[in-house]
Image (cartoon, rainbow, N blue to C red; front, top):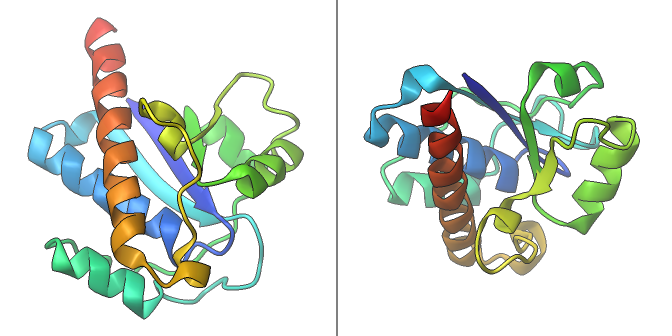
Length: 155
């Protein structure tokens, strides 16, 4: 079982989009039993709030529901509960390193580090471009699934 935690600043845009994109890809690949997927915030700004409406609409445009998801805060115990902790940008990486004691087991990455074109996932909170964020997230989740499926198959 591979346990993945997606994180971003508030857990209302990018990380829940990644969570539900990945769950959809896993379901379509028929490997749901091999994964546990969650998302969380690195800051308290949005705790308890639902997925931001434009992010929810972007997911729905791709046939993906995020009904019932509310922002939760990542905690130090998440480090021991997850095999991979995947952020969206360098600010997230700094926050993850601080929260997770400098990543002693190498579990931290950024989503697009899994692709052939590493870069930050643009924050749609500022850009308002949820379609571009979706494309980045889909590319990152697709690459992450391919690489982790190979690891799961080698177990």
